[in-house]
Structure formats: structure tokens, C-alpha cells
Length: 225
Image 1: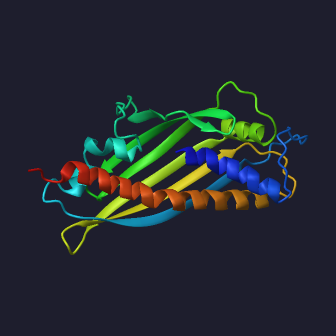
Image 2 (image 1 turned 90 degrees about the vertical axis):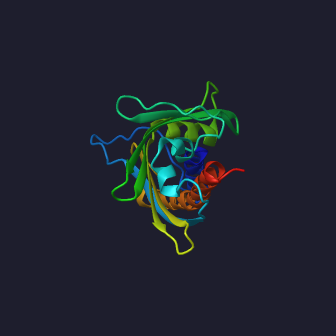
Image 3 (image 1 turned 30 degrees about the vertical axis):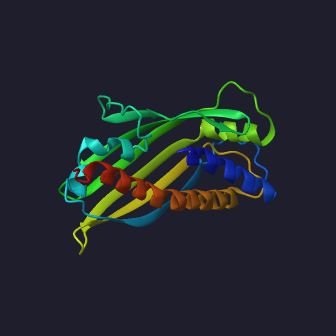
């Protein structure tokens, strides 16, 4: 999920290289313009072989799949959901240039056997960039990350394959909403460039995510002995 922060960093880098410098100073206008929205998605598929043990749909529809669905490390303790059914998942600290980054996601898993779907919603995210006081582009990334509202949705579905296994299909959508700010070159250009970065992030993340779910299933479902 560090990809969410990298999205913001890439947006800043692309906009800056294009000569469209973003200013975080407040607007002098008496009316508040609409927020900036960066949004995109991706689709992918993955083949899951049969194992002779527990079926793949049974695995996805059980809490045994919580860890991979939440993208937690294999040895991580899986948190219990709160009263609203939300998981609070703090990621391991990651060094991002001069910043020490800790991201915490609040996510919900919805399992629906009647539609053969599992939905993972990112309800919100908080990004702790530590106590450092960066300058220049890093300061801009820090401010954008702190101000952005993050929403995400992954929808998983599966169908039976002719070989006895399954085809796992997934869609991933990410949306960043940020307070409006003066942008040299115009908000449409910024939103277009930013949404393209978000789409590239979705496309690069979704297939490995599906493959990780497949591998996690195979690790526990393969018959022993």
C-alpha cells in the first residue's frame, strides 16, 4: 500500500517536470472551489488450480483469507474488526527518501456467497510521515499526503474453470480527494496527469495481488502426506 503515497509523489514529479508547479498557499477567492479528484481503476484475472483439498471459494469466503485480502505479511497478526466491522491495519515503516512513512488503513471485508464476490473497501487511510521537516518537493508530498482523503475498492469474483480449478477476477479502484489549491496550468491538467498515475498504480498492483491470493490459498489448501 506504499503505492498510495508513491502515487502522490509521482503526481507531484510529473506535474513539476511539465512546468505546472503546485502552490499550497490558500486561494484569495471568497468561494471555495471544488476539491481535486484523482481517480482510476484496473481489471485483471488469475488462474487458480484445484488442489484436491479445500476449495478456493471456501477459502475466500472464510476468515482464513483475511491476511492476504488485507495484504498483511504472512507472519503478521491479523487484527480483529471493530464494532463497525473495520480492520485497522498499520503497515511496517518504510523509508521514503528523507521520510519514515507509516501508513494505517481502515478496511472492511464483505463476503457474499450468493453473488460469489468478496469486496474489500478502504474506508480511510492515515499517513504518518514522522517528525522530520522536509523542504521542497518532499514537503509538498508530505502536505498532499496529509490532506488527501483516500478511498479504495477491490472486488473479487470467481468462476469454475474447465480443468476443475477457478478463474479469479478482480477490479481495483482508487480515488484521492484533495482540497483545491492554485495550480499553474489548470486543475484539469493536474487531475488528468494525476489520474493517469493512479491508473498505472492500479494496473501494476492488481495482478500481483490476485497472484498472492492464489499462492496463499495453495499454501494452506494443498493436501499433505
